[in-house]
Image 1 (cartoon, helix red, strand yellow):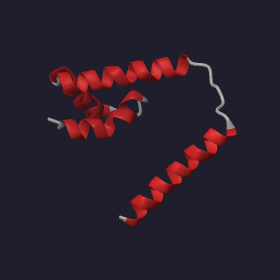
Image 2 (cartoon, rainbow, N blue to C red):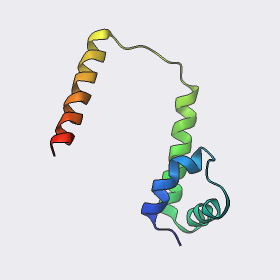
Image 3 (cartoon, rainbow, N blue to C red):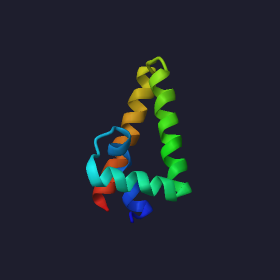
Length: 81
């Protein structure tokens, strides 16, 4: 039986229907047996569905610049650690 951690590591491929065979069967079985992972999977599916239905919008250049600078600082901090 899969652990929740193993299930979550495969969640993206599972939702993208990239998993096949025995692994997919194990993931589906885990979903049937684990209410916590079922909720995570179901919520993620719903979030993706909502996101895909949204119209894209642009953000102001100054907001984009600040966001990118913040991401770069975070990444640099992780590299140092």
